[in-house]
Length: 259
Image (cartoon, rainbow, N blue to C red; front, side, top):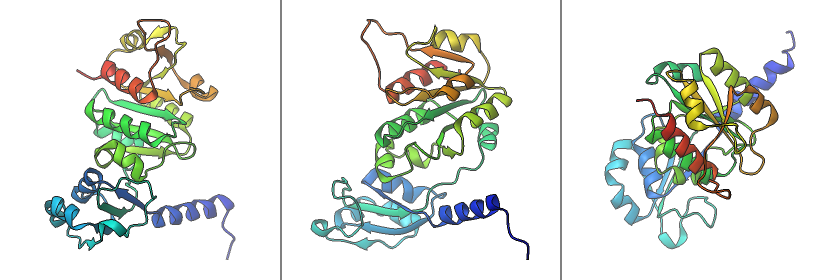
């Protein structure tokens, strides 16, 4: 039998690893939304008696039988500091399908948020909430050096993780080039941008838009910057004003909302 090429072996190994990957969601809202989400593959549900009462409708909808745990010795394998509110659910990561299909199914002109090395789960969760509110087709981030789908991210997203597509892509710059090939204007957020976000959006009116945000401090990587059609800033009232990445995403999404 012919030996498989290395790239084929690595791809199969990655597929098997992804199929075996699980994570624990925690908190009343995150667990409740995951129980109601028909797209979620759910494996194990651990609740206190109080949480089971609060989530009774969601549990019934899911068809799961919870393990009832003592609140003082909560049996789910969570980090000691996790604010679980007596609710934890083991799940598999969501599969949202390919980027081009999400774009095709989204209201037009589509809006995409791209995150370049945004690793903090609280920021990523807050960005997912804003993306859902303002109707973004997807939030995309690289598979490495980005916030993974975790319980902390889900809790910060307050349910948006179950409804807002969050895609981890092999290479962010390649995905941005793919979006450009689909007719997107790619606008990078940068404090030193020569134009404002409003001016950049006006220059690409009626086009689908990808808003690209980098990590606080390092900002956008050189290849990411080079892929952008424009680098834009959010104007501040004074010389010392600045926003964290999740607030900047919310402002940019509001400015770019399709009306």
